Each structure stands twice: as C-alpha cells, then as structure tokens.
Image: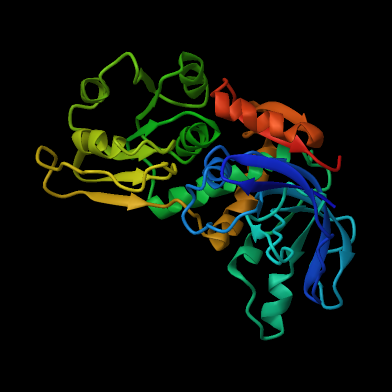
Length: 343
C-alpha cells in the first residue's frame, strides 16, 4: 500500500509497504483522511519529537477511516463503521511508527472486547472511537484536535469563571478559546501575531485580543486584568512564553504548556512573579481522556455549536500531501490542513 514516510531527517517520500496484518481483536481500516499536525508531524520530520529516533518513520495520527475487515474476536466494530484515529503500531521491519495514518490502510483495536476477555489493550486503543455515519470524513479529522484540547482543558483544571491568556491561534489555540467560552470561562485574552487569527478568536469567544508582535503582552494583559490571569496558556510551542506567563498570572495561578516547542530547555526567571505558581505541561494527551471527551465533541457538532469546517483552510489529495507539508515549511497562512486519502 502507499504510505507517506519520513525517510531521513527533513525528507518526506511516498513508500510502498504491505497492508497491515490484523490480530483477532483488530479491525482493518481503509483510511479516508488524515489531518496535518503542524506540531507533532513537523517535529517528527525534523527529528525534534522526543521518543522517535529511528528512521524511516511512517507518519500521520489524525486519521478517519472505514472498517473493512474484522478480527475473529472483534465485537464493538462492524464492517462499514466510520472510525477515528487508527494507528499502525506493527509497521514492517526497517520502519518505525509515527502512527502511520498517511497510508491507504491502518488498524483499530477493540479495547473493550480485550478488557472483557481479561486482557489489557494498548492505551492508544481506548482513543479509537466510531463516528456517526453521516459525519463528513474530511472535516471529521479535526475532531482529533478537538478531543485533545477538551481533554487537556480537564487536565489543566480550566473551570468556569477562570480568566485565561492564550498564546497562539492556530486550530489548537482557537479550540481552547472556543471551548473555554462554551464551558463558562471568565475573561479570555487571545494573543497571536496575525490579525486575521485575532479576528477569528473574537468570533470564537475571546473577550480581548493582543497582537504580540505589535504590542507589549505583559502591559496589555495587566491593562485588562491588573491582578493577572488564572491561567497563561501556550498553545503554539513558544518556550519564552513561560517567562511572559510568570509576569501575567495571579498569585497561585498556572502557566500551562500544550504547544510543542522545538527546544527542550528554557531558562525560567521567577524573580518578579508571585511567590506561588505552577508550571504544567501536557503535550501528549491521554487517549483515555480523549475518548472521554469524544461524545461531548460529537454532541456539540450535532447541535451546531461547533463546526469543524471553521477550523480547516486547505484540503489536499493524497498525491499532493508533500506539497501540503511544503506550505508548513514556508510558514504560509493556514489553519488545519487535511489530506484526502480514500474518499
């Protein structure tokens, strides 16, 4: 089958590998689409993702697919089911798995059947869920980002009436803005260097916006909320924001980091911040937590409260997937980009 692989640091190529073999608790999935993750995918491409060191790597983790074959003991999937987040963990010899969803086929595992039979499934299998049959397979790739964000909000303890300053307004940051407002947050200050994204943040519920390229973030936040914010959140992976966050939080508040920085170190200066504060990272959301967020996201979409298409700017055919990554490398303006594979 055709797959997209990182064959060496910085180099993407299509490769031909065998269709995955499935075990008795697995289902074979025809991949329909896969969203491009500007954080994880790009870090893997440039050998900056902690834990992935052996190349070539079969890439892709934001997939939507359709079940086409069942293992003998699968009880919770059926042929024709639309499924979210297939993962190819048992890749061919000579390759490593970057979850492998830029491929024509992939795999889901029936974690519940394994549990009921006294077995323990890999943690990622709990994040694999079915989608309503009428959901669009292309825009549904965005649901993975939605679930990651909503589950991370729970981990960070974002609660009603809390005030937030959110840096970075790509699909992830805008999701944090949207969901925080839906869940009853207090004042939300959205920050980015792109005025168009700042306008989108206002549309999605931000109370104030700051262009961090043109304005002093600390002065701007303190003008709006002199006492500081409850949470300063990095949604883009800009390590120096940790120190900015320390200057804009209330006593006892948090700097929360979700974005994946290319740098794994950062000097932190807490000389002028409150005595009590917390720095919390959540860069690899729990797949169990994502599964727990799944039904809420589906319900919001069903009710018209949430529209994945508002977060998607480009759709590419599979043959053009490398061109999509070239757009990321050039830092072209974009939101979520999705690759059509089998639809």
